[in-house]
Image (cartoon, rainbow, N blue to C red; front, side):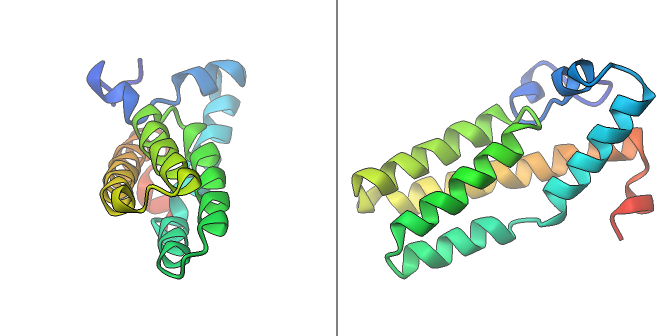
Amino acid sequence: MTAYASAADETVFCVDDLVERLGNDGRAVAQVVHLVRDCIGTGTEPLNRAGDAVQQARFMEARRILHKLRNDVGELGARRFTAACLGLELALAEGRVAEIALLFSAAESELRLVMEHAGGWLDLHAGRASGRN
C-alpha cells in the first residue's frame, strides 16, 4: 500500500501493482509518475468530449471516448471510476437514455476523485509543481 492510500482509497487510485510490475524501483516510480501526469494532465476534457457527443446523440462516439478513458485511468488502479464508466458505457450501448445523466454524473465524480488522489500521490513521489505547470 502506498503512503498516500488507505485501504478504502485503493479503489479510487492505487498504482502499487503497476509500480511492482515495472520493477518496484526508482525507475519504475519515475515511469509511473510520467504515466500519472499524462493521465490526469487532460483533466476532465475527455469526459467533456464524451458528454458533448451524448448531447448530440452520437452514442457510439461517446462510448469510444469513454472506453479509452476507462482503459487509461484504469491503469492507475481506479476501480471505482472504471465501474462507473463501464456502467455509463453499457447504458449508452443499451439505449437506456433515462439513466445516462445520473451515470455520467457518477463517472465525473469518480474521475475527479482519481485526479485528487493522483495529485496527492504525485506530491509524495515527485512534487506536483515540478511537472504539472
